[in-house]
Image (cartoon, rainbow, N blue to C red; front, top):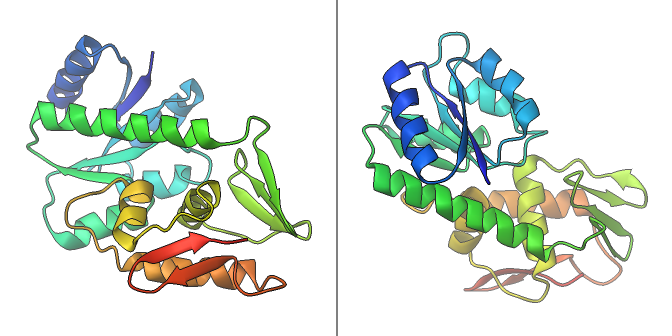
Length: 226
């Protein structure tokens, strides 16, 4: 049974979400502020629904604080409709941004989609959680890549992009595909940011003996060729 953490300062919304999620067979934990949410992380939720307007710290701060050690998808719930707010949520480490008031059917469908995506990723990973490629060691459980024994310092999003390309070696992914698979946001996000992420990943990976670890397939996207 999947566990979902709901973080919202409105009691009625927490109650509504708990009832709907319970009917769908999810275990549900409730938090009304950021501090309580961090405390409930010890229950290891499979997905987090996170409001932005919280009494102690905003949802962006909560997301940024936990993203480095929480791999569960984080879906923002907010009444803020400006593009800048969506961008800020995604840059903080969120995987989706759902505007209030939202339709419960759509919310449940997005939750299911993110959980399926998470399961597919886990199934693709080697059981020991580590893979090697030349001078690289990919530590899937630790969300890091080491080169010649040293951590190259990828951010959460950078690692997820590198992971996607590595476990699908030889397959070309377009920017929009990468954005949707990594961010889980399939509406009006800016897939152009993927180009910058790829540039940073390449810089941190450094050169290999022949060419790049990640190849640009012009007009199509990127693939891992290490």
